[in-house]
Length: 415
Picture 1 (cartoon, rainbow, N blue to C red):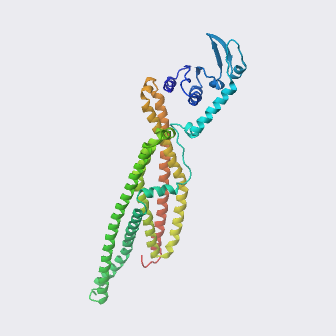
Picture 2 (cartoon, rainbow, N blue to C red; picture 1 turned 90 degrees about the vertical axis):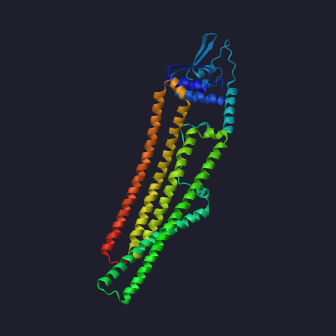
Picture 3 (tube, rainbow, N blue to C red; picture 1 turned 90 degrees about the horizontal axis):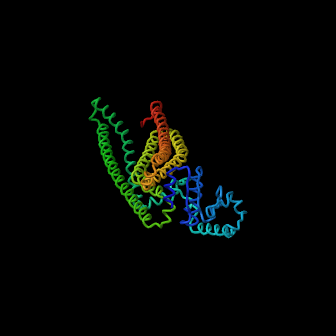
């Protein structure tokens, strides 16, 4: 019945004649078909519905009663309730009929949640607010728990500390090279000061080489441990998702239709596998490098702590302002992707019916509408993220300019 109704809708005729199409389905499905299909899609067309069950009469525009080929009644539903013809014996108990309808509705509501009855193949609800800490904690557990995470943290901190310490050693190297060059130019290399300075120079170069080697080793260890952490998390998430879907009840697929499920298994899983590890590693490197730079700058001149605090406050407030918008736009992008995937899946499943009904143009227009909505959400998200990045780069450039000009203006012996 539902397939034939879908084919009839695709035809887009002016008049529809439906011969007792609701008798082969139960009351809840019949009511849904009547309201969504006949009263919904066909509301602007002439629709003649032949029925034996009087339930749809209440929502009908006109009621026609035929008896042995003769027109017995034509009018509204209210007039039909008051109409009584002995020749046409319509012995209907309307009160009992309404009670039966209400009990059937209550029974359907008790068995199936309201959300399941109103589910749409092209609909997905957005979550609001911040991401719960339990989500991060679940990913943390999937990656191996606190042991692997502690190893990743130690290797990351050690690698960036060693890299920042090498930058700090450069100043000592330059100063000692200048002093050694002065001794050589004055031809006073036989003095004890020169020999002491030369021995200190060798110690600094040896220490610098060892720190560089330690930075390289800890960087490789950081990359390997982080790789195993994300790989283990992705594998466990894959197994969990596939296991849940395979062992799910049929009510799950009634509440979460194909577009939503494919959206989770395609784009979202791709983000977890490919984008999320790169973003996490880059964020960890940027945060640790930023702290290392701030420590080195403030060690040169403690006055630089004032613009550093101002920069940190500005970046933090900017991040708070962006995160609300960026989070909502990312969720909007995901919600706009589900209708696109659901429409494509439904079109491929009904490809034969679509071609038989010559509905290619109509479905193509619907697909383009879903595509335009998704593209709008996607490019809005990209534009806001690029604007946020540009603002942070501009703030960092201003901060770097202040530090450079401060070195030129102020007298800093360690610089």
